[in-house]
Length: 446
Image 1 (cartoon, one colour):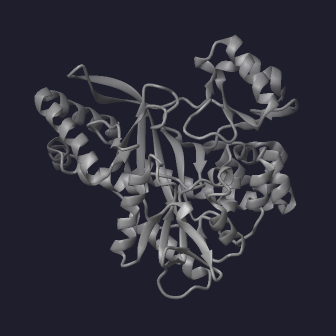
Image 2 (cartoon, helix red, strand yellow):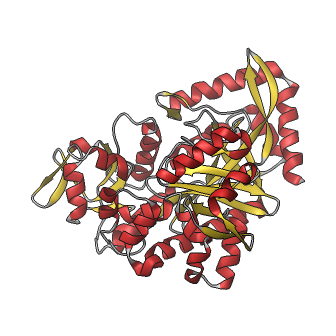
Image 3 (spheres, one colour):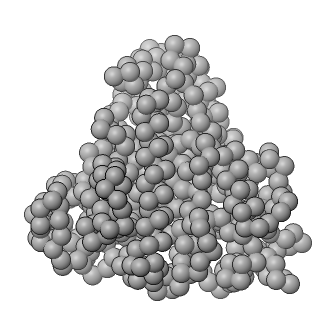
């Protein structure tokens, strides 16, 4: 109730002076453009209100999220007797990709990550894990800085004290700890590696500033700029010690010729890569089946199974089989067809919310077609989790109005370091900036 009251107080403050609210929204968009909170070169879509979360919910979100990530990483190590090839096959991972994730660089396999979650009265529900070059750490910190400059936010914070757990310093600390754990001394030269034309390039520039603030030499590098010389990885006349990888593994493999030296440097361990490619096993959407399928129950003890049942939605790889749901045996495909409104279909390897089918939003005939498609390629079926909804101020045709939007929270993870979160809101049940949603920083009510 305290969060609801705080949200209502913020909304009333925005709505009390529509002209001032419009001016502040315009200022925020201009500030996003000026300070690098951009997506594809345009200001990140946002709203005039941040996400607000209670201290108790924040503690549960972080504690449960860390535990789920730890269990997922451990399960990826031990599923199928520790054979990454068999696990990759179960997940439907392409053969070319599975060969790279099988290269073992030693634990930890996941050093930094982002979870997608719904904050519910019963506790957090995690719907996705993003280990393979997750975005948003820099955006979150910069958005929080700019929201603190808004007059409406400052006035709200006088009566509703809030904190923002920053992320960049924790992420840099985790990177350095990982670097030193690989037997390397001194401070590394860091390359944040991704294609120069990605829409999240600005997020990477903010992170570069975070490494520089720690006194480290850090630069952005396109994979095509990197070459192997004398058993080391170089960009021009600068050697690269630590690759802070933001290029997704499938993209690197799709463009193998352009990424040849970067990939070969990974194979030969000529630079330290953060995260290693093996992190991708535990982020595959089909991996939630490993966490919830009775066939893998032996990987977890009773307490761990209870935690996963409470925080991770029931998930199965789509196939002709019998399985358990809520303790009852079901024939999976007929069950998926008949219980459409309770389920979601997702391709195991897509990102950005592409091709997700929400059963309650999909006509029966179209759902049947999606199930047929899912049988031919790696897809998962997942229990639909009710999406929290909250009011946000929106501006349409020059006027302010109150819109009830669907909201998810995206807590970051940096190997036990203190980090924050961002949140996304959308009218669509597929809540994603790439799919037309907006992003706001997450503040904790003190």
